[in-house]
Amino acid sequence: MKRLYYGLGKRKFLEWILLAVFLLFFYGPLFHMLTLSFAGDYEYPDAVPHTFSLKWWDYILSKGQMVESIGTSLVLAIVVTVVSLLICLPAAYAIARYSFKGRGMVRLSFLLTNAFPKMGIYTAMAVIFYKLNLMGTFVGVVLVHIVNTMMFMVWIPSGAFRTVHIQQEESARDVGASSMRVFFKITMPMAWPGIVVASLYTFLGSMEEAQGSLLIGLPNVHTMPSELYGVIMSFPDTAGAVFAIILLIPSILLLIVFRKYLSAEALSNGFKM
Amino acid sequence: MNEEKKHLWIPYLMVLPAFAVMMLVVVLPILNTVMQSFQTEGGSFTLENYQYFFTSQEAFNSLVFTVIEAVSTMLLAILFSFLLALYLRFSKSRISRVIGRLYLLPRFIPGIVAVYAVMNIIKDAGFINRFLQLFGIVYKPGLLYDMKGIILCNLWFNIPFSAMLLSAALSSVADSYVESARDAGCSWWKILRQIIWPLVYKDVIVAATFILMGQIGAFTIPYLTGPNNPKMLGILLYQQVNTYLNYQRAAALSVLMFIICLGGAIVYIKSNMKEEVWEKGK
Image (tube, rainbow over all chains, first blue to last red; front, side):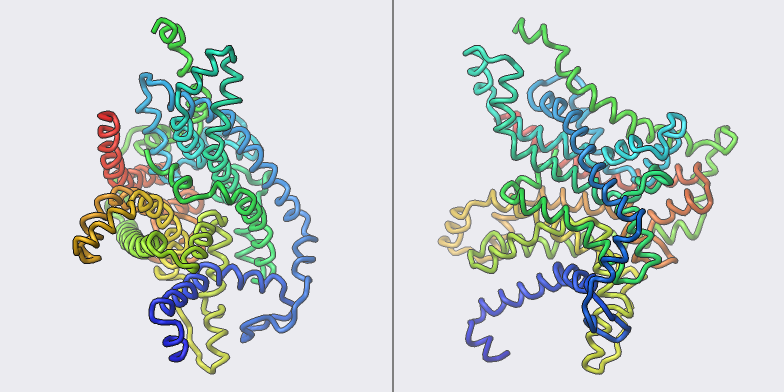
């Protein structure tokens, strides 16, 4: 240790310690879970599994309802993302471009979603959804997920649209492009990074939403996070680890694919008014 | 001008779908909750639902517990993330670039997965305990089912979240500001206080507000890692709904929690409004 300290110099040494602490705290738990998911024998005092095998993967993948929930969650996340894009992008564009009455109110109402306890909203939603026959339906769960992600879907693209200069749109219109064409050929490509980030928030938000899905979706719609609640309570750690890792895979894949869009600046936009 | 007048209804039309969904899934439920909170089961007006929480010792304990938890999470998360963001901004080393790539991931890990992963480490028969036994040390961390467990899990999420907001803010601090202050003989402490802080304090408020609001209504993390008594307000609310099936009381508690959050939201809106005025002058 002492040799390392003098070999690297004080600054470098401290930086390596920082890296180690960072990795242990943030990635240690995930790595530990990954190890557990491939465990064969894992008895109490073992720090790492004695033997490794795929038996817990087989175990989880043989449970029909869990495998089904994987499909449900993925389809749900895609539907939620597409629906919120369709609903929110026009609103985002309008907020960015036009100053109309009630604009401030629209902005405020998005903040309200965050200040009101989710459980309270879900409970009241359940009461309303009962009357509309939406309890236990796929549509009901889609609506629940939209509650959480609407703010991102409006704010981030709205900020992105604002960076597209109106002159660029006007000049395209002057040479004869239709409004639709202007939007899809000029505005949309320029605002694309913001739209990607908002969609990622929406997709991953839907993948992790558990409370509302439990309340509105049961007994017909089972999503992965809502299943995971049960798994954590009643399954061995090794089986839970497998299911948790499966739930992680889409997030990690998406983050790798879209990594060039994910800067701190782009991601922060959703939280400022 | 005339053209614009003609299309006056267009922005309203564009906002309409989002607004309609918002009404259905947010505004109506909230109004419904507020109304329910003043009603008895039969539907007549009462203040009893609120009285219950103002006189209940359990609710008071939960409130104190939640506030302590929320404030400590917020302070710790802001402190660590500020240091992390400063390091990421001003260090040009390879290690800082590596961390800069890796720190955003936790924000996107499904909450329940991460909680589960952390639980497996910190619980009494978890990795910490097992690892120390290799060296013959029997140590029970006692972190799970305790406030420390909740805070630890929350730090896992909130440090990256607020580091993200703060490093975005710090990127507006140009190197030249810092260098010129250095040349003029300023100490690091003075640079931090007089150059960096004024440029980022607004984002510190944003981060703090979101962390606090998230804690007041939090459910997943305290449900899985918190103690039974006293419990977080989110759990108390869940129990009113699921165990006691008392929707009116749950509604009253939701409104009370909303009012607590609103305190934070007002600070947030105020600090953001200032920017609006400044932008208008531009």
